[in-house]
Image (cartoon, rainbow, N blue to C red):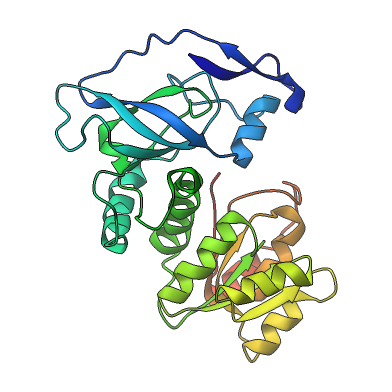
Amino acid sequence: MKAVVITSHGGPEVLQLQDVDDLLLIQDDEVLIKVEATALNGADTEQRKGIYPAPNGASPYLGLECSGTIQAVGKNVSRWRIGDQVITFKFSFCLWVSICYLLESMLEFMLLFQVCALLSGGGYAEKVVVPAGQVLPIPANISVKDASCFPEVACTVWSTVFMTSKLSAGETFLIHGGSSGIGTFAIQIAKYYGIKVFVTAGSEEKLAFCKGIGADICINYKTEDFVARVKEETQGKGVDVILDNIGAAYFQQNINCLNFNGRLFIIGFMGGTVTELNITSLFAKRLTVQCKL
């Protein structure tokens, strides 16, 4: 089979499409997927650079999510059959059961036999093996191609914002990078649950897109102080939850943006990893700060 191979750590030029061994062993609780489409995530680029190693035992190839069709199933697999269409993506298994229930309850419009799944790597190959317990149907209104970039954002937002930060109806929510894949999903699911959504983005075009899919307050971080705007729109209180992919550069501003009992969840560090904090600002408002990649 063919796969995209990291020939050495570096820029995109180190990636090469090569013929590789297609002897993939399927365990009793796994399925073999013929990949039809895959997606690009930040972790893929970090792994290519050599600063985000794949988990032990994972495929040597990139690809945290993909869509495709099941070609073979292990002897203990009963839910899925050869010919089912799937999405695969990398995510922490401890979250998977909860996310399965979430997506199955939301996707009542799913087509029969189209499925998605969790993957620890290997989406950039023509075939990949994945545990059957990490498989879910593709929503009926999403094409197999588009579905390849759906699960990673869905599971990231659900696990961080709802499972961990406990965002709930009637609260306020600030999303940095509102026009990103994670941002656009976060806007829509937050509005579904009755939450007031603030977003930041760097152009009026991006802000208009965010507004169009439900964002309530759209802030151009290049021309406006987002802390001041958040305080203005919340009568000085601040928001209840922030989803941040900037990191150090926004850390103190995010703290200043939070309401009492506010929760900051950091999922990236585009603005650096080192900052300084007066921890009394956390105590004063009983704030929670959490991180994950």
